Image (tube, rainbow, N blue to C red; front, side, top):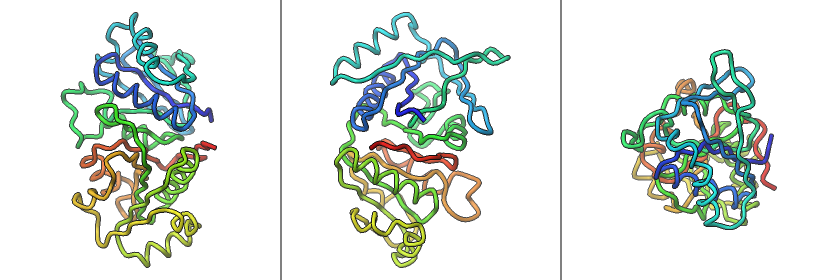
Length: 273
């Protein structure tokens, strides 16, 4: 796995914001920024058991000849950053370009196939869902406008994916010299028992662990700091496991914060040390 963040550049005002956010995240985590400037309206990412097709709306293809200069100008606004402009590794029989999927993180707006004007915070596009489901890396869902994150918050509900989000959050906090906040919903004793079985006791003792009684609801999300990058698993426990967990749906609909989402195939966890 490459210590890099993959960013698909959208040559539009919203694309400027997400590029600046990706660059900031790379600087915080000391990652290389891999920028793909698309010529085609779709591309493929190959994983172990699935090829995921990403469809792009027309704003990604605007002024292709000027896009690289725009990217370089925007990246020049901040401190020096290792950047690589990437090309497809090949083309499939259908003519779709393939991109290398061996990265630590991929930045992906809530939808890449709908015009920004039609995407609300409450919608997670189907292609993005498919990407999260099959990707071997966490997916970074940026905010609508560039805003640096200066805190790390993990949502932990006791599931295996949530435990992996806690471990990833601890590693990121150590790399960035930040404190770690963990927010849980439910019974503290049950959560403590789950954490003990998952080997998380020491991490949670060092973190600012806030447990809120009962099932999660939108009001409780006020506890998430406005400047936090929020880590969470895409799935919860129980019979809804084959769908996106209800907490995940609520969080991505209610919070304007950037999200770092772990799907079931993220393995191994990125190492930011």
